[in-house]
Amino acid sequence: ENKALSVARELVDSSQAIAWLRAEVSAQREMESELEEVQRHNGWLRQRLQDEAFLVKPHGGSASSSQEVESSTLGIATAALAEDRASPAVAELRSLQASQARAVNEALQAAWEGEAREHRVAQRKLRGLETSCLAPARQQLLRLAELSKAWRRDLLRLKAVVDAEGCG
Image (cartoon, rainbow, N blue to C red):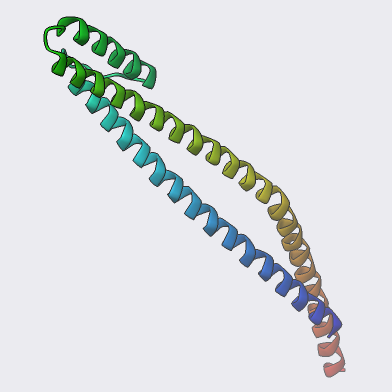
């Protein structure tokens, strides 16, 4: 009875550890889906920025990085101002478009860096949890497996003794 009670306690402890690990995995999956959603949103914002840069550029073409977008918008604004000295309204419009593109670029860069930082922190936390939680849970499960094997052997021996006494 004591061994059975001990095994039952081990089972309860292991079940609680497994339930906790499952909750942690679920929370991690939710965090990953949130991160994917933010990354999609950032991609959409980057595409929008590239589309804006495309509209501002006189010959089309898309920028492949935030630095290219910024330098191209500055170049466009400078060229536009030089070409349109006779038309201050057009020059002002192009200057506003260039400053808007720079502002969007800076906002995207800041958002991207923030998300990347949060992602690295989340990854570090996950590795820490895996180290601190999975190893003890594995040890508990191995101990439980050993106990159940020993319990089974004891039950088989007890059955053999009972069968031998019952026959004799």
